[in-house]
Image (cartoon, rainbow, N blue to C red):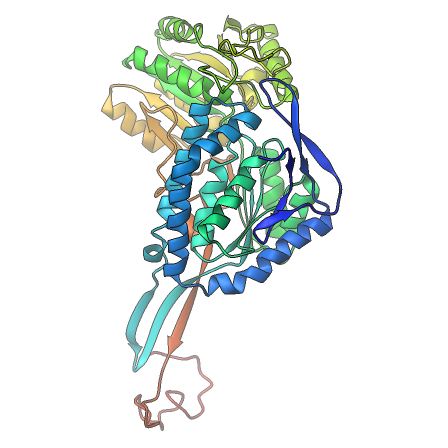
Length: 516
């Protein structure tokens, strides 16, 4: 991608008028690799106006044409997703294989949206009243906004825009300014697939751009993923301005390991779920709850698997990449410092990791490095437990019973994802019934649903009553309309009850309409 990342309007680059920019950094080297435009209010309105202008024609485009474009987009994405993965790694830092997995999971939503005609079907009732038919349809909202986070610059936008576009809406995507290039790559792919001008637009910026999306009357809905404080702000501001809002917030995901669990399976899962993508996932496991007398053995198995991991340049054969910014790296490290000061046991310390470059010769001295960190004997009053760290830090909390473990999860303000590891089907069934969390894994550490199910948490992990993708996503991006109709025959003769019946097909009757 170009070192200068601009907005995207009407299927072409739009530099905007503000002149303000933010740096784009390669987290592995610390080097500034480009700059991204930051919108002022006028720029934001220009992008929104393009989406509003394009909406009537796209709304009236046939489902056959819409889905043909979606299928073409899917094929292009499948052919070239390796390009997108490389772009993600260069700006986010995650290893290429992880980035490729992100793109593939986003593609599942594109494939789901290709079946939108079946999901947009309405209902029809003939002769609901005498010679009166009633039917329902679902129609698109209009221009919709998507505000996506840095940790999944391709997958999270793809949770939303394939369904929104397939349903007949136009889109304004506001990606994170930390890794914005993926959004333009996707925009260019849409153009190549044949999407008309103005249907998919990209707006870069900070709070100025976000506030315009939340307040502008042309925007009919807002889909957001990010931290809980910002999710609360987006939800409150967007709904106050009459918009539909689905705002997915933060997480503190727990995994319970029961004494009867396969500890090797559990240890593998904790390493994968705790340290994949440097822990910068809203579905990462950050709190391991060890039940009974298994903690020592389980912690040893996790440490054994963690110590050999290679933290380094995501373009090599590293297991884990850097954190996204230096400021974030230092913030995560400060939580480790605090946990140690509070009396937790540092089993594996990632603060002094040596970055791996795969013999490429790349200078990684200034990269944003923090290796996998395992901390035992964490208590619930420590900041390393109470706060969402969003880094490669796995905390171990020891409890005596299943009930104590369940209470930990249910009393936590977040409710995004959770998991239980056990060989007891009764315990697993009880857990899935009793736990107050939106997504549950049974011997599965990261229970991200398939695209035809919905993604979303409970409690402070979601504001609004609609999850992402699946049928809930279709309902979010459409609204229902009910039509009641009665017709005369071609000769003009009334085919309903006698005209003399007051209010049936003529005459005066001020009473509330009744069916007959």
